[in-house]
Length: 133
Image 1: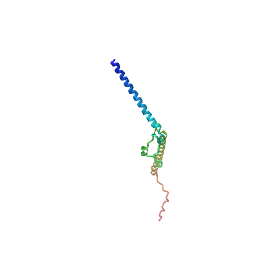
Image 2 (image 1 turned 135 degrees about the horizontal axis):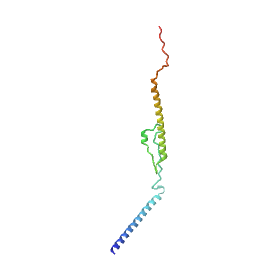
Image 3 (image 1 turned 60 degrees about the vertical axis):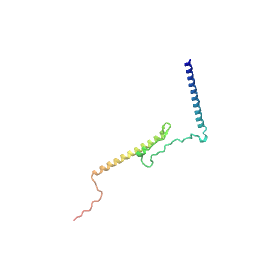
Image 4 (image 1 turned 90 degrees about the horizontal axis):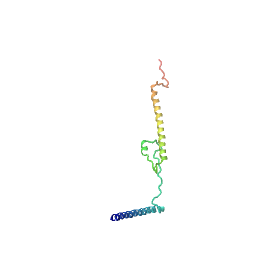
């Protein structure tokens, strides 16, 4: 009989603790809901403008390594904004392709200049008049 009374007393205590926690949770949820909903004009959680990408890549000169290292994209709910990343990568790809084409042109021009002096040099100047005795 004593064992039954002790176990029923523990069950009642556990039930009271559970009900106390449920009531406390309900009070906290109600307080937070009221503070957020009844904010009006001076709401505690104002609307935040979404963070937009500001292109730090220089428009007036080619992109260098420091520009790429300083490139940071704003976070979106699902990672980075795909359009911003795609635009930056497209620009970098275009500039790299343009730079590669320019390097190829300069290398071919240099090869042509270096090959030129090995041929016989012909002068377009008139020959100097010879002195006849």
